[in-house]
Image 1: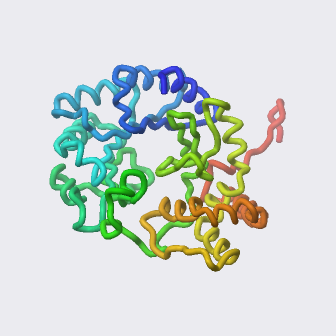
Image 2: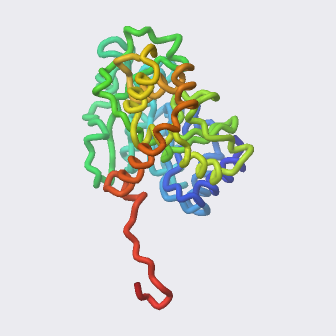
Image 3: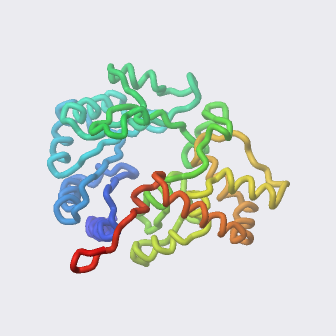
Length: 328
């Protein structure tokens, strides 16, 4: 994307009520001198208070260099730092650079300093959580243990490396961390909340992990249409609402009733793996598109019920309409 394209997308996102802009990639620090310029634009002109950088840390060649760069980005408005590490990254990025970035961001008191790890089955990978912890030299609790009222988050997320993209060729099944279906969440609350704009134009209704061009999670092309109509249409999309409000396990069970011959797995790496197992299977996709309307009533009921509870408080408010004179 060009800087002007990024500014335009940020303006659109601000108009839609976005409260956080995430720079990811690829490697977003390749924006170079444009990165702090864009961070200031987001904070000072677009009025979005929070920004996050998801980086591999290759730029942190020393503690001094890391601190200098992070201090400049922080002054420009960067609030959160996520450092990608683990099986997919340390082949290319020396671990000491991750350590430099972590310590400098911690010392600068960034609101979030998170090591975002992707690991293989215990003891199988080249870079394990214990390797990361020993290198950092201090406790790294998982972020999900942080209090919802915490103003600072420091930790290590131990995500599972998946055999999609580059992992499809590099990771054998024996290296994957599978869980039983019962351990996998069913509803994806990131869907329709974490919207991703990709450089070639695609917009996806989630964080974009392993999303292909033909995905049911793709909601349009930002090079051809504005974000507002894309998102308005997405919020009425049956498949997206099904995943968010009824859940993938409900979808899987319904598909099996429609076609008992479907080959469905019983173990998955993560909720993203479960999602991919359903929406990329040609037969499942055909059934969803042909017969999915049968579930519209149940999906709508689940959506209304969840929006009326503390499950999604920001989506439901008990507001009193006031006249100009201030009387109810």
